[in-house]
Length: 120
Length: 136
Image 1 (cartoon, chains in turn orange, blue):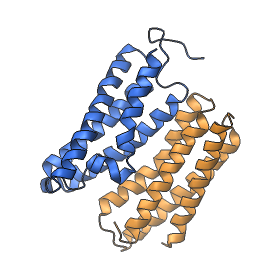
Image 2 (tube, one colour; image 1 turned 180 degrees about the vertical axis):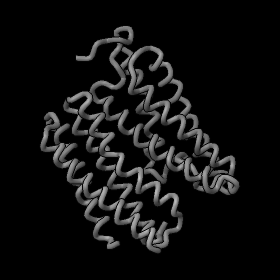
Image 3 (cartoon, one colour; image 1 turned 60 degrees about the vertical axis):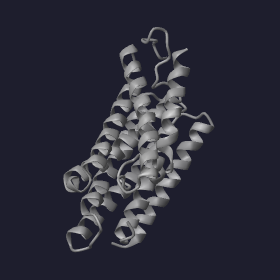
């Protein structure tokens, strides 16, 4: 797997976090556009988990395979949970909730990158 | 609008409280995954540290659920969980600094949560403040 896949997810999720944060700060309700952004990032996250999982299965070594697999599985759940929580009570804070989920995805992907490159 | 089902109090999961519950949820996921991997693969290496890791996971899960729910029972449970969290991060954080040998970087609370941007240290203070604020 090329590290570019992970960097793409970091970039997309940070972008989504900024949009979500902006919606809350500007007192705007989360709308379908934000939902579309979440969908794009989630697709990228799923692709990342599948590609990294295949890489691991075909011989790439990481320091702790269980931790790495745990991240790959856990990261795909973050945005669906965040959206469910955000949309259960649509308010100015829904964008902020999505931003917290997106920021978590960015941090988790950075950790994945470090593990993939054998630095953690 | 939110119906006051908590003795006239504001539900903890309303307004900006949605954000707090989301952050707690992230830490519930992080601590649970971490403890799960540790207990399943390396428990014999450091049983005490890894059991503490499991305790922190339970605390975050309970705090998340209690803050997300409404009612006096959930509020009391949230107080207990967030207070335990504060004590936990302070005690484990201090022990991990003064007795580093016995406390390898193994829990979310090690080094006062330095591995997580010190959010675990700030979070219980915000949680207690929010519980007080919404109780008025």
